[in-house]
Image (cartoon, rainbow, N blue to C red; front, side):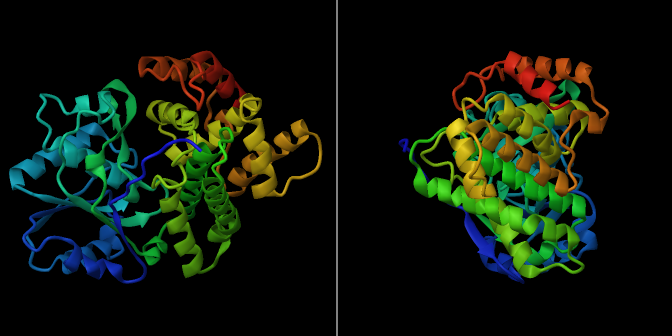
Length: 387
């Protein structure tokens, strides 16, 4: 196992009717800006619950954060923070809203002349941020319990990640009943997003991180078990929703990635597909991962065989046959969740690959993978395998 530091200061407030706890979680003298995406938080009554829980605290609302949060919209929120003198932010939504709030919290106090420098430096130049909490309504990204996010800048077609120790939520309220109104596509996206987050920290090479491996395999097995049920249930099942919420949070709160190598190639390639073609984030991951596993099977053989055995029960056949079966099971799982796994399913052909590779090079994504050896030429092979 590799050396590691692990620290996660986010308080999780989990279960039914926990939004009322905001009255204890938010400082009594805070001047709060609530940030949301579209109109769903208002329509479902979640926003009304939040406002009621805030009681007599001064608060305002900023709405309009996109599914792939943009720098342009985030900077509008920064201006509202400054104009209104807000000193506490509250994200009400899914990963996109929470990612945006992390950036807004840092950008509002950023001392440079252009807050986009935060993204160009990956967050390494963040020295302070406004305090913030979250009320999660869409489980997927794990952003509610980590210090990172992804922001898109539309005018230059860039989608970049950032992280900082200043960007952990102080608390996150996780009420599984808030997922009851989600459409099937968003549930499917959440399952796949959490699945791939887990895989990218697990399916690399062995370092005898037995605890991390077993945690990761448990998350994957849970998602495989509940995923199809989430789409076919006639009524929401609280336990399935609770397990989805907690699996998505645990998939990216740093625990399963501590002391083990990680490979975020699928995410980096997927980000470019979203920035260029507007494909949902989770769906780009389903496009890339099976093709990437096939292309990198030699580098990942030991863990790919372990994954096949422990997650999918694949124990017979040659090593090559077992790896083929593990990749096929992965692709079939995504497709069973209603998520396509081929570029052609989105009307994209070989010409789209050139654009993605150009963007990867422009954004410095030229040495990806756990071995730092996944070059643009290999990324091209991965994408060709996804046609």
